[in-house]
Image: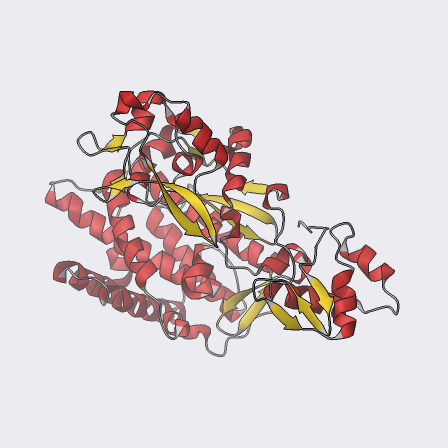
Length: 444
C-alpha cells in the first residue's frame, strides 16, 4: 500500500486559533498546533514523530492527521504522484461517438485551450466563439459552450464530435478524450475504471487498446483532478494502514480484508467455467458466506437457508428498483424477477457474456458498491441483483426481435437503464437490502 510521505499543513497558528484564510479558522489546542506546524511537506510521519519534544504517541499523531485532513487543515495530496491501478486487461479507445458531448466538459486545462487555438475551426463551422466562462471556487474558468443541450462541437446530424471526426481524438480537450474513464482514490492510490455509459463501450471492450499500454496518456488524466472522487476520506492516503471499509451497516473491516473480498468476487466473474447466471449466484452466495463466517466459493449447492436469504434480498432490491421505474411493464417485470429468483436466469452468447462480466468487474473495481449504499455487501447485492434485472430486460428485448438470447447491445442498453435507476435509489436503511446483515457473526 501507498503512504504519501509529505503531509503539509495549511495556514498558521495565531492567538490560539489555526487560521487558514477564506473564513476557515479553527480552535486548536497548543499541543495539536505544535504537531501541525511539523507538517512542513518535507518530513514523513516517522520523521515528524521523532522531531517532536515532548514526544507524542503514534496513536495521537494518527488522530491529528485524520482530524486535520477532515477539517481542511492539511493540503490535498499531490494527485499526480500517486500510482494508478488498472484492472486486468481493461481496454479503451475514444471513438468520438458523441456521448460525452451531452455533458458539461470543463473546466478546460491550459493545454486544452492551446490545442483548440491551434486548430483551423473554420473546417467545423466555427470562427473561434466556442468558450464560456464560469466561476469555480471563486476563480473564472473556461468551459466549452453548449448548443441545443450539447457541446457546440457536437454534430446533431452525424451524432458525433466534429473535432474528433475532422482532426482526430487527440485534438479534443483531455476530459472529452477520457470519457468514460473514472479515477477514484483509495488507500492503494488511484484506481482507473470504465463506466458503462459510453455508447461505444462494446466496441472499445472488443477492439480498444489495453490501458496498461497507454501509461503516458493515463498519467495525463491526473491533471484533471478526478482522483478526488472516491468513497474514502483523504487522510487514508497519509495513513493507509489505518484505512477501513464498511462491510455492512455498523461493521467495518481493514482495507486489506476488503481487497480480499473484492478479489474473490472478481475471480468469480472471471471464471470461464461459470456461466453468467452461475457467477452471479456464486457472488451472492459468497456475500452471504462472508456474513455467516464461511466465505467460500465452492461449487456445492446452496443450502435451504442460503436460498431463503437470497430470495429475500432479491425481493427487497427488486421492489426498491421497481418503485423507481416509470414504465409499468418494466416495474412489473422487476417485481416478477423478485418473486421468480433463479428462474430469471438468462443464457448469453459468448460476446454478451464477456461484455457483461467486464461491466460488472469495472463497477466493483471502481468502488461503486461503496458509493451506492456506503456499505460493501449491500452495495454488491444491489449491483448483482440490478444485473439480474438487466438480464431479464435484455431477454425481453431479444424476444421482441425474435431471438433466443440477447446480444451485447441489448445487454448494454438494459444495464444502463437499470444502472440509472440504481444511482437514483438512496435507501433510508441500507440494511433492508441485505436482511441478514443484522446480528451476523463475522470472523475477526
